[in-house]
Image (tube, rainbow, N blue to C red; front, side, top):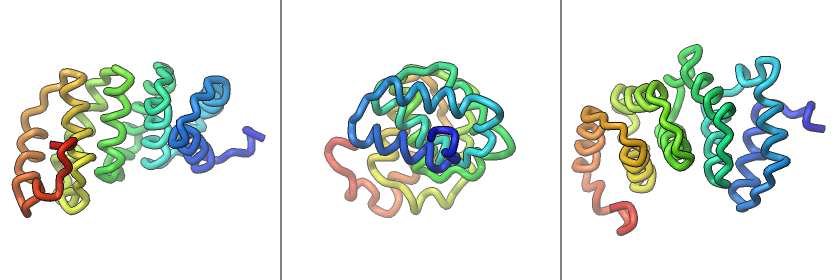
Length: 167
């Protein structure tokens, strides 16, 4: 059956298992192997990449080869320019949760945030907190990213919408 899965079905399935807190190492390894063969990852869109990375991080499965290839896919063909803020935050959180420091990816994610003024309308306290936490956790200091996020946070009474945990 696995051979019939398309990119969206793979990403949705691993996301669902992770969301339910099911850590099925055999199943997740099978999905990882499946997407790493025959150029399958080239069919992944931004959401598929982010969901796959998030699912592995959520259930604490550190597949370095898969994560390296997901980062590579995010950086290919201008795909990173299609990432929404939630997908950027999810990618950063995923790599930090698994303690995988991919400097090129983290720089590209920061550049995506910095270059996209429209992200400001999509901010949530959780996504901002996850993003800043990820950069701190990995020890990636990007002053311009921090300045942009700080400016956004200080606009439009953003802090009044934050939870105590996010602050």
